[in-house]
Image (tube, helix red, strand yellow):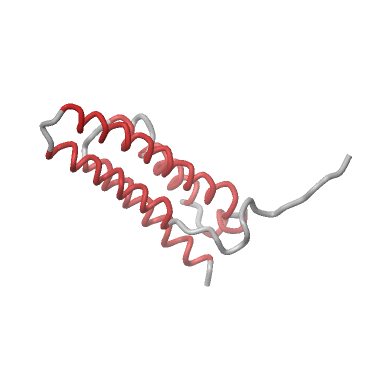
Length: 124
């Protein structure tokens, strides 16, 4: 049996919270377009896309949380686990997947911004 070891799932340096933020901004845009439309077919498409993009936000956040950040980061920034938990919940069924409320999308983007601030501080 051959054992293979890797310290990340992507080549180092590729991680960036901007991926999650772009998807979260797409979620918000879908919500805004949903609110501005009276076409039921368009609204259904907006909800479908919003839900898919919400899942993408969660995926990008999970990669950062589980693969980029290491124990020393969590020691230096003890709020980090809580931020990721809050952000992924805001992108889930109790958050942007389950509502078309733009304020929820804004909260999600705010949490991603807080995570990004810490991310970039760890890169210095």
